[in-house]
Length: 640
Image: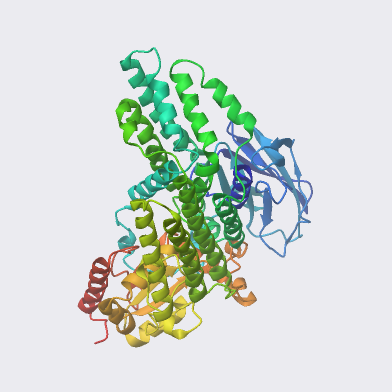
């Protein structure tokens, strides 16, 4: 399962960010064979151990090298080119044969010139280079009949005035977002919560007393036993932290690609299926486990003495408990993909998970008398798996909802989504009521769990009947306007434009500032802001009456009109086909960021009035809106 997930993941994230350092050093040359025939030679030295992927790799493999020649009536190219030696190997990550250049690359491109010679033209290479990480590169060479050089003299203009997505913003210095990052510790705490849940499963809990007795039934001194116990706990944390390292492949991804990854319909449907499988496993239909041979090898290594043996004991714990921890770790992985800092978030989540899992093993090994106060293993652990199964099923619906929202299928609107969550909550409630009725002893734990589930069912039921906002579900349920009835739209009085040029024209006409809202159908934090902050009476009044709200959906998969695609510069035409791609590129071009939500206040003449803001409390958002209005008023450009 992990192999399949990683393979699909690698396929979807293989396009990477063009960083400032290119491990390929190019030497261009043009060779004139006659008055009209020439060859362009592009020779590159590839830093070791980097490799550059060759043309014609499988579509499910790495990104193939591509050559693009600027259209010019005085030059002809039939699309063919020759290369230096191409290496091949079976790649275990992509699980197929790949083709690549190593150490050096030589491309020969035959071109024909008209008799009148040509004006300066451009040839561009698109390629992927990989080591432990991958980068997608775009290199342009400028040439004429007399010579060639690396670089594009007009690239600056293409990114600015000649790029139709670029707008002449004033006061660009205010675009620096100094909002403090608070999410990593929250992710760490959530990871700990997942770890504590995993502790209560039948795969992990019975192993605690067995492990503790191992450390204190040895002939070692108490001091050595204590050191080994600490090493055991550290090893558990280290193992789960190391599991996140391969996913730093996505660190530095092209921001536009990251957005496409997080909102990719295929990926969301894939996770929907995976989470349904996880939930069925927790419900006891079958068991997900690793091959027995792997577990046996780790167990044999754990018999070695000292730190090495203790480390392999921790590895054995991770492998043996995989049937219970695997689905939980899958949840951490899936949730991390919706963020631009996915690998870092995953690392913090894994650290929290490993820390929570290691804590009782270490504490009880240090203080073995506490084991007498531990609850005994029993059927209650299977009930924990049932709860986890319900959680996995609810999360599966979230991924299905993401795909539905982005594609605008209309299959899983807000009411149906809440109804399905209500069905899950009611099913779990009746399951535990049945447990309480049949049980001879009324466990306090069962009473608490049943009460919480009943309260959740009541909360969902009232929200479904009354069409109330349900703030606890903000970001999980579809947005209020994605509903079977208009009554579900809590922000229906706010007129939101979905085209920047249209909003700018209205702003010039009315004198009101523009609130640019970069958002997405599958953006969890966007829904939280809209349903918790925008519904505040004062915020709602300002947005509906004093701003021109412009909501630009960066994951809108609707195709652009052909004439609109043609208006985009040649470099961008290849990458932008949908409305969402357009607004994502618009955000990156003008605001140098790709995260959502992202709010900017602009005057009618496009002055940045206040530093951008992302997630915020209602109080912070009010102050930010007031500050923008105040600066508009001082300039004398705001309407009464």
